[in-house]
Image (cartoon, rainbow over all chains, first blue to last red; front, side, top):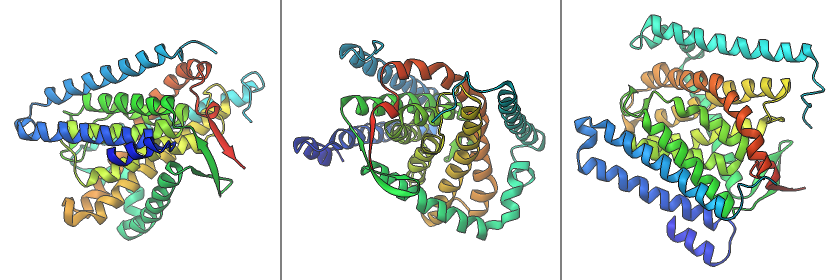
Length: 78
Length: 281
């Protein structure tokens, strides 16, 4: 997905950005999943770790997008 | 065209509030019924009875049709086509940096918020208590397709965090898209400020989207039973009714309030989907 998205961006296709985003988040998701599985977090019931990672994703995601929207002036009323 | 808040008479408002109150009362009654009968007796729940009446064969057939329709719509919308008066029509979603950032934002918010309650399983390995479900229809109603795709990705992230990532997650990916897509596409008034908007929300955003999502995922779990291993009886007798309730309960109560608060700032900043989408007739 990441490779296809990159090619689409390079060829200036509109959907490239979305495909790249899906690919990047897919890799992030699988990375988290295998990291948790490897460290036996699912088996040992250390769910607070997963919950905390969820909160971090929430805060970082909102923060990054709001920072970007502020920079491009999107948060001003039109 | 939406009915303006000023143009709606008191009778229409009263009717809208009665319909909303009936929906909420029914959902509370279903929840109370589940609590009284116990989580271990899903075959006795009120919400299970329509599914029992239909039977597995009929449910499988109906859900199969909904699965095919949902999957076609998912890929149509992503490839720049939509249905307008039941006809395939070209639409232009810019998919510029703003649309992509909307998808990223909704994915992070939905995924993170779902993961926060990931430690409270209802069916271990398949579903958990999910108050963040209230966000899915909201993201569709406010942001359209970029928001709906964000909810799909967010659900995928939450599945991984909660340890529920499996072949079943493929069904969840499109199933969560449907929760956001149905109210986005079928509500005519997304403002939460008119009687029409409120009634439309309860019909499409609460009832239809919850049932469609549940049947979509259940059908997928049924078909993928050899890989996933969840018995068919369990899929239709526990998972399906629980997902309907889990989606509808929090959506009926929280989403209209969030929508009422968030619609004006989203609209004022040009982020509302209708201001960013172009339909080619």
